[in-house]
Length: 225
Image 1: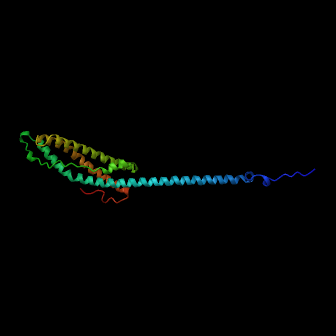
Image 2 (image 1 turned 180 degrees about the vertical axis):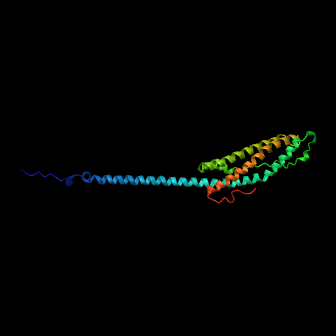
Image 3 (image 1 turned 90 degrees about the vertical axis):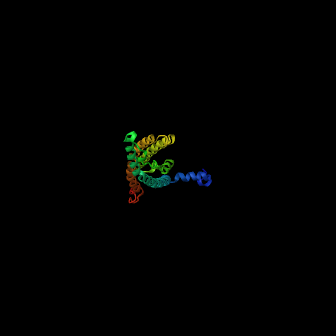
């Protein structure tokens, strides 16, 4: 019986068949190891990419917080100086107004009251406005941000009182009824002389906290009055 010739696979099969055959004879463990290595490399790349992005975002937040704190420090020092500059005048003027109003109406002498204008404080608040616009307050320590917010709230209350007395002055000029103005001014100063010492204490407590957050010395944090 004639011998039947069976052609080998690599003699007549197309190239893709040979590739499949080679893959079939390749050790399975080697393929699994290669896939696992590729997964590890891809996962590591993704992790490093996310970590780098997080680091850049954190660095940006720190820069915003630091810039915001420096603006707050400068603005609070300015406002503190303004408050300290008129506190004594307000206390003295209030005493004079109280004495005038406590006297008998017939014996009152407007010349005995020395009012050199209301001299209110007009607070700077640009740092606060910028912090709200940039949302940088969210990147500051929570307790420190709360203390800053409290100061600006008290300053706003002061500003509202000032706005009210100034509107009253414009509505009713001083030469119409000086006694009415003195009465309104006395009520205004009664609130102002209570708020101003409170603000000075808050400034002096907050400035060292800002300096510590900035990592700076606190030797200039509490300026003398």
